[in-house]
Amino acid sequence: MLGILDRAGRPVPAAEPWAVDSLVREGLIDGRMLAEDRGLRPGAEGRRGSAQLVDGRVPHAVPMTLRAPHGVGTEIVL
Image (cartoon, rainbow, N blue to C red; front, side, top):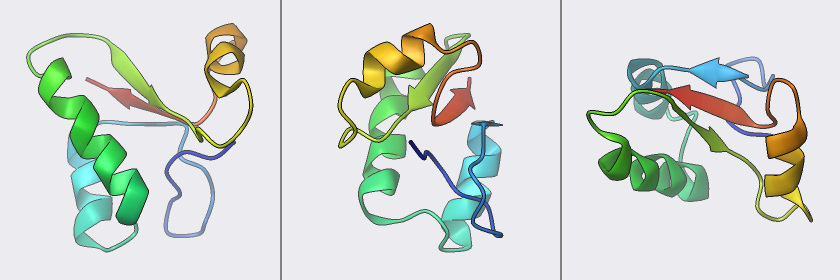
């Protein structure tokens, strides 16, 4: 289950919004992943915590993420 990928194509386990913005400017985040990132931010602005981006095409992605010790996909640290 992949979240955001870095320049080398490796999964990014966690990132702050400014780092995600940098990957967007470089064109590494686009399409559906860009829409997911932009969709989570308005509801999270001004709050502490994190949000998890996971591949919704994978069956049971959300329960797997909740049970995983370090999450699955990319954690956006707010």
